[in-house]
Image 1 (tube, rainbow, N blue to C red):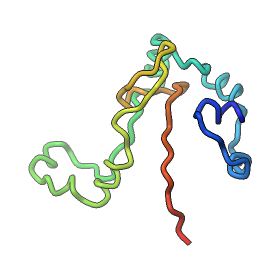
Image 2: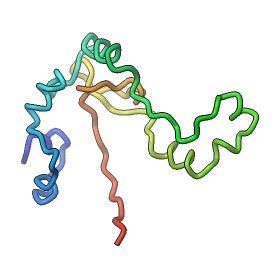
Image 3: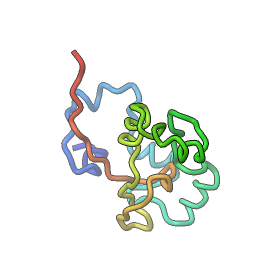
Image 4: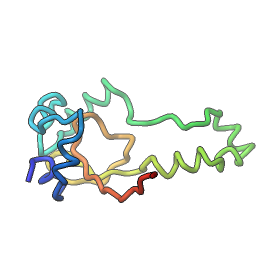
Length: 124
């Protein structure tokens, strides 16, 4: 089992794992992100956050908050529903060598997180 599969706690299909053009050995990824399998400590995470900012994605509709209060229908468009379903609120992350539940916006490059994969049907 590969190091990345072991960390994820799952077996990886070799045909899928080796098909990616962006495959990077886990030790190289840790080195590039100044991280390790035990995750970041608080000080490293603070430094990464000050350098990179918050881990947020702008919503598809850019409207000021006051307008959404006046026209709440803006929040119920298909694009906004899809956005809200796709963007997680929380993540499981190793910080100071312990698993924590953390606001997803607080994640930084180098954080080690748990990923739960769901089967996504392919379009044929």
